[in-house]
Figure: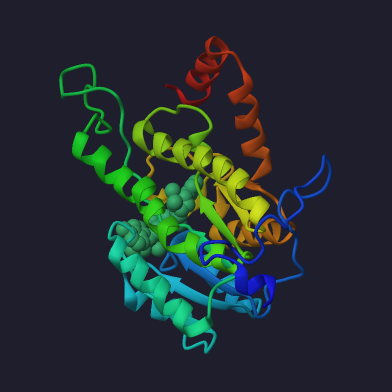
Length: 293
Ligand SMILES: NC(=O)c1ccc[n+]([C@@H]2O[C@H](COP(=O)([O-])OP(=O)(O)OC[C@H]3O[C@@H](n4cnc5c(N)ncnc54)[C@H](OP(=O)(O)O)[C@@H]3O)[C@@H](O)[C@H]2O)c1
C-alpha cells in the first residue's frame, strides 16, 4: 500500500514537504501565470474584487465569483464560460460553506481564494452632538462597530473556515486576504475599520507560519486609496488614489511573483510603513499633521 493510502484523512497531501524560504527570494512559491488556474474571488460584484475578477477572466483563469448580489456577479461574468457564480453573504457561514461546496463540486478544488469583501463606516471615539464630537458625524456607534467587525473580521473568518479544509486536503494553493494600510497605524475616523484591518494583518502573519510549511501560500493585500463605491463616500481628498484596474493588476502580478504582502501604491504605502516604525510621540504628531486630526 502506498504512503498516500496510509496518510490520515486530516493530513494534507503535501504536509511537511514545502521548503521554507531562505533569506532571499519570494516568501510564497511564484507561478507562471493564471491561465487555467481556478480562482475564487469573494467580493467580486463591484470595486476591487470586480476588477480582480475581470482581470483574471482576461488572463484565462477559471473564476468563481461570490458576493451577495447575484445580478451584479452575472454582469461581471458577462457570459464567460470560465466564470462560476456562487453568491454568498460572508456574515452567514452556511452560505459561505455552500458556495465552497459548489465550487469544489464543479472544479474539484481551487488554486487561489481571494477574500476581498469588506465594508467601511467612518467612526471616531467621541459621542454626542454638542459634546466633544460636535457636528462630526463620525461618532462612536456600538451597532456600527459591531457591523464593521461582523463583515470585515468575522466575515473573513467565515470564509477561512470554508477555504482551509480544501487547501489542506490539496496540500497546495493559496489564500489571499485583503486588509488595508489603515491597519498599519491608528488613523482618525477609522476607529473600528482600522482595528478590523489590523486584526486581519496579524491573522495573515500568523497564518503564514502555519500554512507555508504545508505548501499553501498566504497573501496579505494592503491597498492604499482605490477608487471604488466604498471610497466614493469619503469626504476628504484621498492621496495617491488608484484606479481599481491598476489595483487588480498589482494584486495579481505580485501574488504570481510570490509576494507575502502586496501593497500599493508604493509612494503612499512606504510612507505609512515608516510611520509605523516611529515612537508613538512622533507617530501621533505626524498623523495629526498629515490628516488634520
Ligand atoms: N477602496 C479602497 O481604497 C480600499 C483601501 C484599502 C482596503 N480596501 C479593502 O478592499 C476590499 C474591497 O474594497 P472596495 O473598495 O472594492 O469595496 P466596495 O467597492 O464596497 O466592494 C465591496 C465588495 O464586497 C462585497 N461585500 C460586502 N459585504 C458583503 C457581505 N456581507 N457578503 C459578501 N460580500 C460582501 C460587495 O458585494 P455585495 O454588496 O454584492 O455583497 C462588493 O463586491 C475591502 O475589504 C476594503 O476594506 C479598500
